[in-house]
Length: 211
Length: 270
Image (cartoon, rainbow over all chains, first blue to last red; front, side, top):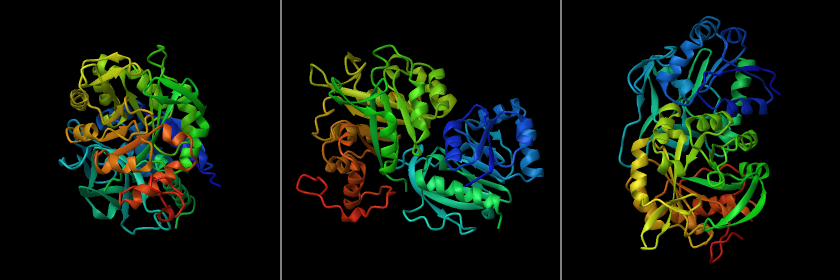
């Protein structure tokens, strides 16, 4: 039973409902907020996201959330989970519809998936992730490490140590990143059925009792 | 690589699930929360909810049902029916859906696709192309439950919506709907080989073999069905057992032994 309080950032983009449903299902206290003051009091921050990078950064800026996020995540080392666009936002910059600056918490750039006549874009559906063995997050999954992806760009990390797992779709690219108190996933754990819920529970356990 | 998807389509008339035949006869089946709960436990890859009477009856999209459906749904949820504006899309996504299906508006107001894709991303925008043979024996797209002719060939519409920003096409054969004759493989193949976005086949499934054909012969990225899943428990698990035995790369997530399913001469599980 998780008693962790999870603070989900609502910046007008993304599937807030399904993310909060998943954490509620796992027994967490869930709060959804757009307010910096609430972010400043958080124990665990979740940044979901669906849509365009540029719009997302603009919204975060307009809501005055950039400072609060930097304060909490970089200075205070509050546990942070980014999902899909929420993972891409922590890059230095993104090439989606122009060149946009991101939060810059993990070095790298968000770039388009390579066009290939045999591959459909967006990368949409269940795909198997390949853990880089940095921890035990993906142990004991009996039916394979399939998670639900839906995206057209990926996070090209500068440092291989930040890459937590990869996935293959044409090329092999980042599926999750991990650095200190930051963990972020390209796929949607809240829509990845048993595997997704299991991963969220493992993540919650890891922040409640850090190894 | 990404796996092929198996998707039940739940057709709704208001809050009631219905079974359809050529988009004409509709028989009531049951309530939506139960269906979602069952499908979640039976190894489906996504769920599509279509409110088929919304456009015809001039109803706004049923946000309430999206909220109810979303609570117990831990696979991607797509909702369609009566979507006309970007605000409609926003409300549906906030209520818990991941994708929306645009049907009639793809023809009446194609800019909605572009505006929706701009705002929410193309991956949110599934366009459904419902078609049947017209009086000249040519395939033609029909809207409003298959009643209103558009003068468009499915291929032309598919290419057009791709350019506008659709992330996926739901290709629905009205003639085969409820027929159990199998998918219209030729049309699926034609569309699939002409666009770079995923194509979901729908309409006509009667036996498990049809799912495998939709992928291996039709070259769809996902196979959907409505009617066939309504009457048999665990039917989606059986479908996957059949597909995996045919060598298809699909996700398996329940604890059954998929290799143990036997299929008879008409591909029913025993």
